[in-house]
Length: 74
Image (tube, rainbow, N blue to C red; front, side):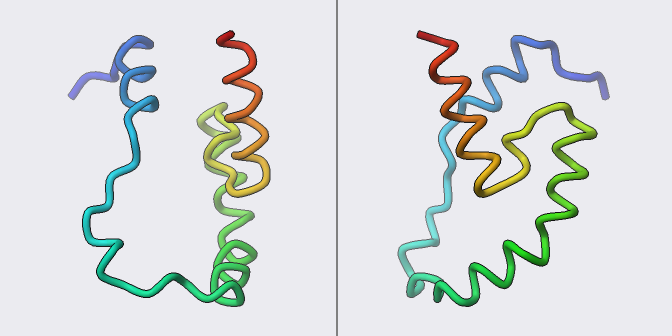
């Protein structure tokens, strides 16, 4: 399988998030979200660093990266 081109990656990364099942469930408790974010933070940072894309280091770094990309696109 070949690596996607830069244009294909841009298309993939610009696609909206889809989760048609999310409406079936109650929202996650804030305490649970915080626990998961703290647990996965080092792994997400490593992934973001490996990919050279800070959007994978959610939530704080991801929000900043998305805002920076939006500002650069305008």
